[in-house]
Image (cartoon, rainbow, N blue to C red; front, side, top):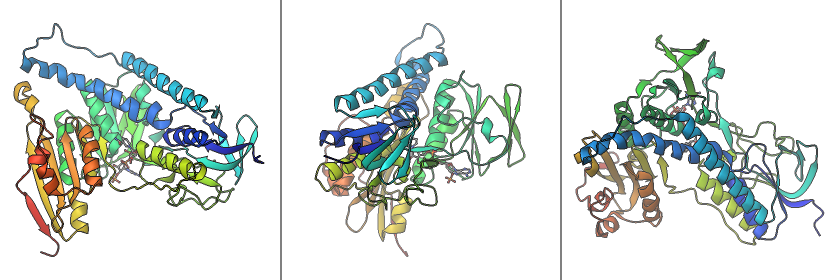
Length: 459
Ligand code: NDP
Protein backbone atom coordinates (compact mmCIF):
# COMPACT_ATOMS: atom_id res chain seq x y z
CA UNK A 1 0.00 0.00 0.00
CA UNK A 2 1.26 3.44 -0.93
CA UNK A 3 1.59 5.93 1.88
CA UNK A 4 0.42 8.67 -0.50
CA UNK A 5 -3.16 9.66 -1.37
CA UNK A 6 -2.38 9.06 -5.07
CA UNK A 7 0.50 7.74 -7.14
CA UNK A 8 0.34 10.66 -9.55
CA UNK A 9 -1.03 14.16 -9.24
CA UNK A 10 -1.20 16.03 -12.56
CA UNK A 11 -1.55 19.80 -12.58
CA UNK A 12 -3.23 20.87 -15.81
CA UNK A 13 -5.65 18.93 -18.03
CA UNK A 14 -4.23 19.96 -21.37
CA UNK A 15 -2.81 17.72 -24.06
CA UNK A 16 0.25 16.61 -22.08
CA UNK A 17 -1.39 16.26 -18.68
CA UNK A 18 -4.41 14.32 -19.91
CA UNK A 19 -2.28 11.87 -21.88
CA UNK A 20 0.11 11.33 -18.97
CA UNK A 21 -2.74 10.82 -16.51
CA UNK A 22 -4.59 8.38 -18.72
CA UNK A 23 -1.53 6.27 -19.57
CA UNK A 24 -0.35 6.21 -15.95
CA UNK A 25 -3.81 4.94 -14.97
CA UNK A 26 -3.67 2.19 -17.60
CA UNK A 27 -0.39 1.11 -15.97
CA UNK A 28 -2.27 0.73 -12.69
CA UNK A 29 -1.42 4.05 -11.03
CA UNK A 30 -3.98 5.96 -8.99
CA UNK A 31 -4.18 9.35 -10.65
CA UNK A 32 -5.74 12.72 -9.88
CA UNK A 33 -5.76 15.57 -12.41
CA UNK A 34 -6.53 19.17 -11.45
CA UNK A 35 -7.68 21.79 -13.94
CA UNK A 36 -8.62 25.36 -13.06
CA UNK A 37 -10.16 26.25 -16.43
CA UNK A 38 -11.59 23.77 -18.95
CA UNK A 39 -10.43 20.23 -19.69
CA UNK A 40 -8.56 20.07 -22.97
CA UNK A 41 -6.09 22.89 -22.40
CA UNK A 42 -4.99 25.56 -24.82
CA UNK A 43 -5.06 23.39 -27.94
CA UNK A 44 -8.65 22.22 -27.60
CA UNK A 45 -10.21 25.23 -25.91
CA UNK A 46 -8.42 28.28 -27.33
CA UNK A 47 -5.68 27.14 -29.65
CA UNK A 48 -5.17 24.66 -32.46
CA UNK A 49 -8.70 23.28 -32.65
CA UNK A 50 -10.76 26.49 -32.77
CA UNK A 51 -7.99 28.10 -34.86
CA UNK A 52 -8.33 25.41 -37.53
CA UNK A 53 -12.13 25.74 -37.47
CA UNK A 54 -11.80 29.50 -37.98
CA UNK A 55 -9.27 28.95 -40.76
CA UNK A 56 -11.81 26.71 -42.52
CA UNK A 57 -14.47 29.37 -42.03
CA UNK A 58 -12.20 32.01 -43.54
CA UNK A 59 -11.38 29.93 -46.61
CA UNK A 60 -14.97 29.84 -47.83
CA UNK A 61 -14.43 33.45 -48.84
CA UNK A 62 -11.91 32.24 -51.44
CA UNK A 63 -14.06 29.26 -52.42
CA UNK A 64 -17.08 31.43 -53.20
CA UNK A 65 -14.94 33.67 -55.40
CA UNK A 66 -13.17 30.78 -57.10
CA UNK A 67 -16.38 28.92 -57.89
CA UNK A 68 -17.20 31.37 -60.68
CA UNK A 69 -14.25 30.11 -62.71
CA UNK A 70 -15.75 26.62 -62.63
CA UNK A 71 -19.18 27.66 -63.89
CA UNK A 72 -20.95 28.39 -60.63
CA UNK A 73 -23.17 31.38 -60.11
CA UNK A 74 -24.12 32.11 -56.53
CA UNK A 75 -27.72 33.21 -56.06
CA UNK A 76 -26.67 36.12 -53.87
CA UNK A 77 -23.57 37.64 -52.35
CA UNK A 78 -22.50 35.34 -49.51
CA UNK A 79 -22.61 36.83 -46.03
CA UNK A 80 -20.89 35.72 -42.88
CA UNK A 81 -22.29 35.49 -39.35
CA UNK A 82 -19.57 35.74 -36.71
CA UNK A 83 -21.86 34.85 -33.79
CA UNK A 84 -22.90 31.68 -35.58
CA UNK A 85 -19.27 30.60 -35.97
CA UNK A 86 -18.47 31.41 -32.33
CA UNK A 87 -21.46 29.32 -31.17
CA UNK A 88 -20.63 26.42 -33.51
CA UNK A 89 -17.03 26.46 -32.29
CA UNK A 90 -18.20 26.52 -28.70
CA UNK A 91 -20.40 23.48 -29.27
CA UNK A 92 -17.51 21.54 -30.80
CA UNK A 93 -14.92 22.36 -28.14
CA UNK A 94 -17.47 21.57 -25.43
CA UNK A 95 -17.98 18.17 -27.09
CA UNK A 96 -14.22 17.57 -27.23
CA UNK A 97 -13.71 18.68 -23.65
CA UNK A 98 -16.46 16.27 -22.61
CA UNK A 99 -14.73 13.44 -24.48
CA UNK A 100 -11.48 14.17 -22.64
CA UNK A 101 -13.31 14.02 -19.32
CA UNK A 102 -15.14 10.82 -20.24
CA UNK A 103 -11.88 9.23 -21.32
CA UNK A 104 -10.25 10.08 -18.01
CA UNK A 105 -13.28 8.79 -16.08
CA UNK A 106 -13.28 5.55 -18.04
CA UNK A 107 -9.66 4.97 -17.09
CA UNK A 108 -10.33 5.65 -13.42
CA UNK A 109 -8.58 9.03 -13.31
CA UNK A 110 -10.08 11.39 -10.75
CA UNK A 111 -10.68 14.90 -12.12
CA UNK A 112 -10.72 17.91 -9.81
CA UNK A 113 -12.02 21.22 -11.11
CA UNK A 114 -9.71 23.37 -9.03
CA UNK A 115 -6.40 25.18 -9.10
CA UNK A 116 -3.54 23.22 -7.59
CA UNK A 117 -0.32 24.59 -6.16
CA UNK A 118 2.73 22.63 -5.11
CA UNK A 119 3.49 22.67 -1.38
CA UNK A 120 6.52 20.40 -1.32
CA UNK A 121 7.95 17.52 -3.38
CA UNK A 122 5.00 15.27 -2.51
CA UNK A 123 2.08 17.55 -1.66
CA UNK A 124 -0.26 19.86 -3.51
CA UNK A 125 -2.91 22.21 -2.22
CA UNK A 126 -6.20 22.62 -4.07
CA UNK A 127 -8.12 25.88 -4.30
CA UNK A 128 -11.01 24.12 -2.50
CA UNK A 129 -8.72 23.85 0.53
CA UNK A 130 -7.83 20.15 0.32
CA UNK A 131 -4.25 18.93 0.48
CA UNK A 132 -3.31 15.84 -1.49
CA UNK A 133 -0.13 13.82 -1.15
CA UNK A 134 1.32 12.14 -4.24
CA UNK A 135 4.24 9.88 -4.98
CA UNK A 136 4.82 11.90 -8.15
CA UNK A 137 3.65 15.32 -9.28
CA UNK A 138 3.46 16.22 -12.98
CA UNK A 139 3.38 19.89 -13.91
CA UNK A 140 1.55 20.30 -17.23
CA UNK A 141 0.26 23.84 -16.91
CA UNK A 142 1.15 25.06 -20.39
CA UNK A 143 1.83 28.70 -21.19
CA UNK A 144 -0.03 31.98 -21.22
CA UNK A 145 0.10 34.81 -23.77
CA UNK A 146 2.72 37.50 -23.18
CA UNK A 147 1.42 41.07 -22.92
CA UNK A 148 4.43 42.56 -24.69
CA UNK A 149 5.58 45.13 -25.55
CA UNK A 150 4.72 46.70 -22.20
CA UNK A 151 3.37 49.94 -23.65
CA UNK A 152 0.68 52.19 -22.22
CA UNK A 153 -2.70 50.73 -23.09
CA UNK A 154 -1.52 47.18 -23.85
CA UNK A 155 -4.20 45.99 -21.41
CA UNK A 156 -6.77 47.16 -23.97
CA UNK A 157 -5.54 44.47 -26.36
CA UNK A 158 -6.95 40.96 -26.52
CA UNK A 159 -4.85 37.81 -26.79
CA UNK A 160 -5.46 34.44 -28.43
CA UNK A 161 -7.35 33.57 -25.22
CA UNK A 162 -10.10 36.06 -26.00
CA UNK A 163 -9.99 36.52 -29.75
CA UNK A 164 -12.17 33.51 -30.61
CA UNK A 165 -15.02 34.94 -28.56
CA UNK A 166 -15.00 38.60 -29.54
CA UNK A 167 -18.52 40.01 -29.21
CA UNK A 168 -18.50 40.99 -32.88
CA UNK A 169 -16.33 40.54 -35.95
CA UNK A 170 -14.01 43.57 -35.85
CA UNK A 171 -14.12 45.78 -38.90
CA UNK A 172 -10.54 46.87 -38.19
CA UNK A 173 -7.96 44.75 -36.38
CA UNK A 174 -4.40 45.60 -35.39
CA UNK A 175 -2.17 42.56 -34.85
CA UNK A 176 1.07 42.88 -32.87
CA UNK A 177 3.70 40.20 -33.60
CA UNK A 178 4.88 38.18 -36.58
CA UNK A 179 4.89 34.61 -35.25
CA UNK A 180 2.56 31.64 -35.76
CA UNK A 181 -0.37 33.08 -33.87
CA UNK A 182 -0.13 36.55 -35.37
CA UNK A 183 0.00 35.40 -39.00
CA UNK A 184 -2.70 32.77 -38.53
CA UNK A 185 -5.17 35.29 -37.13
CA UNK A 186 -4.19 37.95 -39.67
CA UNK A 187 -4.99 35.42 -42.38
CA UNK A 188 -8.31 34.39 -40.83
CA UNK A 189 -9.61 37.88 -40.13
CA UNK A 190 -8.52 39.33 -43.48
CA UNK A 191 -10.60 36.67 -45.25
CA UNK A 192 -13.59 37.17 -42.98
CA UNK A 193 -13.67 40.77 -44.18
CA UNK A 194 -11.75 42.58 -41.44
CA UNK A 195 -9.29 45.29 -42.41
CA UNK A 196 -6.09 43.97 -40.83
CA UNK A 197 -2.87 45.82 -40.02
CA UNK A 198 0.02 43.80 -38.62
CA UNK A 199 3.12 45.27 -36.96
CA UNK A 200 6.27 43.52 -35.85
CA UNK A 201 9.79 44.46 -34.81
CA UNK A 202 11.38 42.20 -37.45
CA UNK A 203 11.59 42.89 -41.17
CA UNK A 204 9.57 39.81 -42.06
CA UNK A 205 7.06 37.35 -40.59
CA UNK A 206 7.86 33.98 -38.98
CA UNK A 207 11.41 34.24 -37.75
CA UNK A 208 13.17 30.88 -37.94
CA UNK A 209 11.22 29.55 -40.91
CA UNK A 210 12.78 29.11 -44.35
CA UNK A 211 13.22 32.46 -46.09
CA UNK A 212 11.17 31.50 -49.13
CA UNK A 213 8.29 30.39 -46.91
CA UNK A 214 8.43 33.65 -44.99
CA UNK A 215 8.39 35.71 -48.16
CA UNK A 216 5.61 33.58 -49.62
CA UNK A 217 3.36 34.01 -46.58
CA UNK A 218 4.11 37.72 -46.42
CA UNK A 219 3.14 38.14 -50.09
CA UNK A 220 0.02 35.96 -49.79
CA UNK A 221 -1.19 37.85 -46.72
CA UNK A 222 -0.49 41.19 -48.40
CA UNK A 223 -2.49 40.00 -51.35
CA UNK A 224 -5.35 39.08 -49.00
CA UNK A 225 -5.33 42.67 -47.77
CA UNK A 226 -3.12 42.58 -44.68
CA UNK A 227 -1.18 45.82 -44.33
CA UNK A 228 2.22 45.15 -42.80
CA UNK A 229 4.31 47.48 -40.66
CA UNK A 230 7.75 45.89 -40.47
CA UNK A 231 10.37 47.10 -38.03
CA UNK A 232 7.55 48.90 -36.29
CA UNK A 233 5.82 48.45 -32.96
CA UNK A 234 3.04 50.36 -31.26
CA UNK A 235 4.15 52.86 -28.64
CA UNK A 236 0.72 53.36 -27.07
CA UNK A 237 -2.90 52.32 -27.36
CA UNK A 238 -5.68 54.69 -26.32
CA UNK A 239 -9.38 54.10 -26.07
CA UNK A 240 -11.86 56.63 -27.27
CA UNK A 241 -15.44 55.39 -27.28
CA UNK A 242 -15.43 52.08 -29.15
CA UNK A 243 -12.22 52.93 -30.99
CA UNK A 244 -8.69 51.94 -30.09
CA UNK A 245 -6.17 54.46 -31.33
CA UNK A 246 -2.74 52.93 -31.92
CA UNK A 247 0.34 55.11 -32.14
CA UNK A 248 3.19 53.43 -34.02
CA UNK A 249 6.92 53.88 -33.49
CA UNK A 250 6.91 55.57 -36.90
CA UNK A 251 4.72 58.30 -35.38
CA UNK A 252 1.66 57.30 -37.39
CA UNK A 253 -1.67 56.85 -35.59
CA UNK A 254 -4.33 54.42 -36.72
CA UNK A 255 -7.81 53.53 -35.42
CA UNK A 256 -9.05 49.99 -34.80
CA UNK A 257 -11.94 48.10 -33.21
CA UNK A 258 -9.66 45.50 -31.65
CA UNK A 259 -5.96 45.00 -31.04
CA UNK A 260 -4.60 41.46 -30.87
CA UNK A 261 -1.29 40.95 -29.12
CA UNK A 262 0.54 37.77 -30.24
CA UNK A 263 4.10 38.27 -29.11
CA UNK A 264 4.86 34.86 -27.72
CA UNK A 265 3.78 32.78 -24.76
CA UNK A 266 5.17 32.53 -21.24
CA UNK A 267 5.50 29.23 -19.37
CA UNK A 268 2.72 29.07 -16.80
CA UNK A 269 4.69 28.65 -13.58
CA UNK A 270 3.89 31.81 -11.68
CA UNK A 271 2.17 31.19 -8.33
CA UNK A 272 2.43 27.41 -8.65
CA UNK A 273 4.68 27.02 -5.63
CA UNK A 274 7.43 25.39 -7.66
CA UNK A 275 10.29 27.52 -6.38
CA UNK A 276 9.22 26.85 -2.78
CA UNK A 277 9.30 23.12 -3.53
CA UNK A 278 12.84 23.55 -4.82
CA UNK A 279 12.08 23.12 -8.53
CA UNK A 280 14.51 24.95 -10.79
CA UNK A 281 13.13 27.31 -13.41
CA UNK A 282 15.03 28.90 -16.29
CA UNK A 283 15.24 32.63 -17.01
CA UNK A 284 11.93 32.58 -18.91
CA UNK A 285 10.25 30.87 -15.97
CA UNK A 286 10.12 27.48 -17.73
CA UNK A 287 10.54 24.33 -15.67
CA UNK A 288 13.99 22.84 -16.28
CA UNK A 289 13.78 19.13 -17.07
CA UNK A 290 16.03 16.31 -18.29
CA UNK A 291 15.36 13.96 -21.22
CA UNK A 292 12.83 12.07 -19.06
CA UNK A 293 10.96 15.31 -18.28
CA UNK A 294 12.20 15.07 -14.71
CA UNK A 295 12.98 18.23 -12.75
CA UNK A 296 15.82 18.57 -10.24
CA UNK A 297 13.30 17.38 -7.60
CA UNK A 298 13.10 13.62 -8.26
CA UNK A 299 9.36 13.29 -7.55
CA UNK A 300 8.34 16.25 -9.74
CA UNK A 301 8.17 16.06 -13.54
CA UNK A 302 6.97 18.53 -16.17
CA UNK A 303 5.80 18.18 -19.78
CA UNK A 304 4.58 20.43 -22.57
CA UNK A 305 4.78 24.18 -23.02
CA UNK A 306 5.61 24.79 -19.36
CA UNK A 307 9.04 23.31 -20.12
CA UNK A 308 9.47 25.52 -23.22
CA UNK A 309 11.14 22.84 -25.33
CA UNK A 310 9.19 22.53 -28.58
CA UNK A 311 5.83 24.15 -27.89
CA UNK A 312 3.51 22.02 -29.94
CA UNK A 313 0.58 19.82 -28.89
CA UNK A 314 1.85 16.52 -30.32
CA UNK A 315 5.15 17.09 -28.52
CA UNK A 316 3.40 17.61 -25.18
CA UNK A 317 1.38 14.45 -25.79
CA UNK A 318 4.50 12.42 -26.55
CA UNK A 319 6.30 13.82 -23.51
CA UNK A 320 3.32 12.98 -21.28
CA UNK A 321 3.07 9.47 -22.71
CA UNK A 322 6.81 8.81 -22.37
CA UNK A 323 6.75 10.06 -18.78
CA UNK A 324 3.87 7.71 -17.85
CA UNK A 325 5.41 4.72 -19.64
CA UNK A 326 8.76 5.29 -17.97
CA UNK A 327 7.61 6.04 -14.43
CA UNK A 328 4.61 3.70 -14.23
CA UNK A 329 5.02 1.26 -17.12
CA UNK A 330 8.50 -0.04 -16.48
CA UNK A 331 9.76 1.23 -19.85
CA UNK A 332 12.64 3.58 -20.60
CA UNK A 333 11.41 6.15 -23.10
CA UNK A 334 12.61 9.61 -24.00
CA UNK A 335 11.20 11.87 -26.70
CA UNK A 336 13.21 12.93 -29.71
CA UNK A 337 12.74 16.62 -30.44
CA UNK A 338 14.41 16.31 -33.82
CA UNK A 339 12.69 16.45 -37.21
CA UNK A 340 9.33 17.60 -35.91
CA UNK A 341 7.07 18.45 -38.81
CA UNK A 342 4.79 21.42 -38.27
CA UNK A 343 2.30 23.61 -40.07
CA UNK A 344 1.26 27.22 -40.01
CA UNK A 345 -2.43 27.52 -40.84
CA UNK A 346 -2.37 30.68 -42.83
CA UNK A 347 -3.96 30.56 -46.28
CA UNK A 348 -1.98 29.21 -48.05
CA UNK A 349 -0.49 26.99 -45.36
CA UNK A 350 3.13 26.32 -44.58
CA UNK A 351 4.07 22.71 -44.03
CA UNK A 352 7.63 22.13 -42.98
CA UNK A 353 10.02 19.60 -41.56
CA UNK A 354 13.73 19.80 -40.86
CA UNK A 355 16.22 22.54 -41.52
CA UNK A 356 15.54 25.76 -43.36
CA UNK A 357 17.95 26.66 -46.14
CA UNK A 358 19.50 29.28 -43.85
CA UNK A 359 20.06 26.86 -40.95
CA UNK A 360 21.38 24.13 -43.25
CA UNK A 361 23.88 26.51 -44.81
CA UNK A 362 25.10 27.48 -41.35
CA UNK A 363 25.54 23.85 -40.28
CA UNK A 364 26.65 21.90 -43.39
CA UNK A 365 29.61 22.24 -45.74
CA UNK A 366 27.69 21.66 -48.94
CA UNK A 367 23.99 22.35 -49.27
CA UNK A 368 21.96 21.68 -52.40
CA UNK A 369 18.61 23.34 -52.97
CA UNK A 370 15.82 22.04 -55.16
CA UNK A 371 13.09 24.61 -55.33
CA UNK A 372 10.08 25.35 -57.42
CA UNK A 373 7.26 27.84 -57.50
CA UNK A 374 4.14 27.33 -59.57
CA UNK A 375 0.53 28.26 -59.98
CA UNK A 376 -1.65 25.55 -58.43
CA UNK A 377 -3.91 23.75 -60.89
CA UNK A 378 -7.10 25.07 -59.32
CA UNK A 379 -5.93 28.63 -59.94
CA UNK A 380 -5.81 28.05 -63.69
CA UNK A 381 -9.61 28.19 -63.87
CA UNK A 382 -10.35 30.25 -60.76
CA UNK A 383 -7.96 32.92 -61.93
CA UNK A 384 -6.74 33.43 -58.38
CA UNK A 385 -3.27 34.93 -58.25
CA UNK A 386 -1.54 32.47 -55.98
CA UNK A 387 1.68 30.57 -55.87
CA UNK A 388 2.70 27.25 -54.42
CA UNK A 389 6.32 27.17 -53.29
CA UNK A 390 8.28 24.00 -52.55
CA UNK A 391 11.84 23.54 -51.46
CA UNK A 392 13.98 20.52 -50.64
CA UNK A 393 17.18 21.19 -48.71
CA UNK A 394 19.81 18.48 -49.21
CA UNK A 395 23.18 17.71 -47.67
CA UNK A 396 25.37 17.95 -50.80
CA UNK A 397 27.89 15.48 -49.40
CA UNK A 398 25.57 12.62 -48.39
CA UNK A 399 22.45 13.37 -50.47
CA UNK A 400 20.40 13.20 -47.27
CA UNK A 401 17.31 15.42 -47.21
CA UNK A 402 17.75 17.91 -44.38
CA UNK A 403 14.52 19.81 -44.75
CA UNK A 404 11.41 20.14 -46.89
CA UNK A 405 9.25 23.25 -47.01
CA UNK A 406 5.93 23.74 -48.72
CA UNK A 407 3.70 26.79 -49.02
CA UNK A 408 0.37 25.90 -50.55
CA UNK A 409 -2.96 24.15 -50.11
CA UNK A 410 -2.86 21.27 -47.64
CA UNK A 411 0.83 21.83 -46.96
CA UNK A 412 0.17 20.76 -43.37
CA UNK A 413 -1.08 17.39 -44.62
CA UNK A 414 2.00 17.02 -46.81
CA UNK A 415 4.30 17.89 -43.92
CA UNK A 416 2.98 15.01 -41.87
CA UNK A 417 4.06 12.48 -44.51
CA UNK A 418 7.26 14.29 -45.39
CA UNK A 419 8.06 14.02 -41.70
CA UNK A 420 8.22 10.23 -41.98
CA UNK A 421 10.62 10.36 -44.91
CA UNK A 422 12.91 12.93 -43.32
CA UNK A 423 12.83 11.17 -39.94
CA UNK A 424 13.83 7.93 -41.69
CA UNK A 425 16.82 9.66 -43.22
CA UNK A 426 15.58 9.70 -46.83
CA UNK A 427 17.98 10.89 -49.49
CA UNK A 428 17.14 13.03 -52.47
CA UNK A 429 17.60 9.85 -54.55
CA UNK A 430 14.84 8.21 -52.47
CA UNK A 431 12.53 11.11 -53.27
CA UNK A 432 13.44 10.80 -56.97
CA UNK A 433 12.82 7.03 -56.95
CA UNK A 434 9.28 7.56 -55.66
CA UNK A 435 6.56 7.48 -58.29
CA UNK A 436 4.46 10.62 -58.58
CA UNK A 437 0.76 10.80 -57.74
CA UNK A 438 -0.75 12.67 -60.64
CA UNK A 439 -2.18 15.25 -60.80
CA UNK A 440 -1.31 16.60 -57.38
CA UNK A 441 0.76 19.47 -56.13
CA UNK A 442 2.76 17.11 -53.92
CA UNK A 443 4.09 15.23 -56.94
CA UNK A 444 6.45 18.13 -57.53
CA UNK A 445 8.35 16.92 -54.48
CA UNK A 446 9.37 13.71 -56.27
CA UNK A 447 9.92 15.24 -59.68
CA UNK A 448 12.27 18.08 -58.75
CA UNK A 449 15.24 17.00 -60.85
CA UNK A 450 17.17 20.21 -61.36
CA UNK A 451 19.19 21.63 -58.55
CA UNK A 452 18.44 25.33 -58.21
CA UNK A 453 21.45 26.21 -56.07
CA UNK A 454 24.51 24.72 -54.41
CA UNK A 455 26.19 26.42 -51.47
CA UNK A 456 29.67 25.41 -50.39
CA UNK A 457 30.94 26.72 -47.11
CA UNK A 458 33.80 29.11 -47.57
CA UNK A 459 33.34 29.16 -51.37
P1 NDP B 1 6.13 33.14 -31.70
O1 NDP B 1 7.31 32.91 -30.85
O2 NDP B 1 5.86 32.29 -32.87
O3 NDP B 1 6.16 34.64 -32.23
C1 NDP B 1 6.30 35.71 -31.34
C2 NDP B 1 6.27 37.00 -32.14
O4 NDP B 1 6.25 38.08 -31.22
C3 NDP B 1 7.49 37.21 -33.00
O5 NDP B 1 7.10 37.94 -34.13
C4 NDP B 1 8.42 38.01 -32.08
O6 NDP B 1 9.31 38.84 -32.78
C5 NDP B 1 7.41 38.90 -31.39
N1 NDP B 1 7.85 39.34 -30.07
C6 NDP B 1 8.29 38.59 -29.03
N2 NDP B 1 8.55 39.36 -27.97
C7 NDP B 1 8.27 40.63 -28.32
C8 NDP B 1 8.35 41.88 -27.65
N3 NDP B 1 8.74 41.98 -26.39
N4 NDP B 1 7.99 42.97 -28.32
C9 NDP B 1 7.57 42.89 -29.60
N5 NDP B 1 7.48 41.75 -30.30
C10 NDP B 1 7.82 40.63 -29.66
O7 NDP B 1 4.89 33.16 -30.68
P2 NDP B 1 3.34 33.00 -30.88
O8 NDP B 1 2.74 33.75 -29.75
O9 NDP B 1 2.90 33.34 -32.26
O10 NDP B 1 3.12 31.44 -30.68
C11 NDP B 1 3.57 30.81 -29.50
C12 NDP B 1 3.89 29.36 -29.75
O11 NDP B 1 2.68 28.64 -29.94
C13 NDP B 1 4.70 29.11 -31.02
O12 NDP B 1 6.07 29.21 -30.80
C14 NDP B 1 4.29 27.73 -31.40
O13 NDP B 1 5.16 26.82 -30.78
C15 NDP B 1 2.88 27.59 -30.84
N6 NDP B 1 1.90 27.68 -31.93
C16 NDP B 1 1.90 26.76 -32.92
C17 NDP B 1 0.99 26.82 -33.95
C18 NDP B 1 1.02 25.82 -35.04
O14 NDP B 1 1.69 24.80 -34.90
N7 NDP B 1 0.35 26.06 -36.16
C19 NDP B 1 -0.01 27.88 -34.00
C20 NDP B 1 0.08 28.80 -32.91
C21 NDP B 1 1.00 28.69 -31.94
P3 NDP B 1 10.76 38.33 -33.27
O15 NDP B 1 10.52 37.40 -34.39
O16 NDP B 1 11.44 39.58 -33.67
O17 NDP B 1 11.38 37.67 -32.08
